[in-house]
Length: 319
Ligand SMILES: [Zn+2]
Image 1: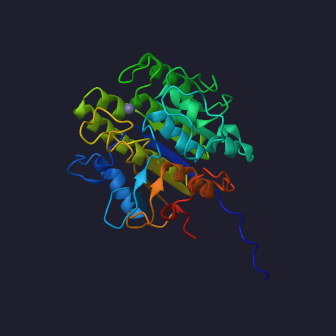
Image 2: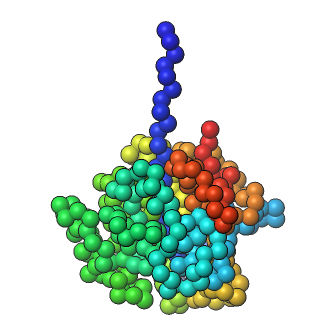
Image 3: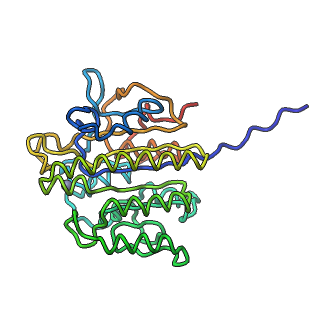
């Protein structure tokens, strides 16, 4: 009997959840974070890793800045490159290829790539192109397929609820973003899904501390729900959770250049494709290192730009 030819590798699916403006201490310190991330903590401990919690010999996780506001943070996450010229939330759409663009450029069908975000402006960071079916950023995003009545209905509900707690009339509240993303994961089964949650940051800016912690708790439950659905679908999968920036240590309403704590972020990941480790980063990590890590999982070649980040060793595929 001749040995069977090796099976072609089963493609890993990735869900990236970004939670805007989370203080890393609220992820790692149950007392300070009021246990908001209990599920993420439990999952990353059992089947992954959570980096950015400090520790004497552990590396840090940071946004590269220098402005520590959202759009530059998301640009760093999605392009996997440091030092974008963008320093505010008012920059035009990225001109650099993002993880989504790269997947599409390497033959991945556009309908197997999705991004669903509360903040309407996040589309400027997720792709240099506007030509997507399942990039559903903000409440005005058009239904990709009118024959999908359930999705059309969920998007319409998000539009009716648009605004609060955001500052733009096109902001879709997280509860609706979660429902849309859950539907897309279940029915579209994308190879790569990004979900951008924003209520925590918006409520913190409003000085609503209870609301901020409530948004974190809801985000945590959502992450585990999404992970359960991914596992139920039976393909190898990785869930990665991060934040675009931290918050000012002395006053959680604010974040930005010169406000200590604003650069501090975290990266947590779990799934059946990585090896659990102790939560200590072996080097200092930046948000630009996330996309290069996901490129490895998604089978994309490395980015050769001098500004590109490097894969995070603790999050690489277990072989
Ligand atoms: Zn903010």
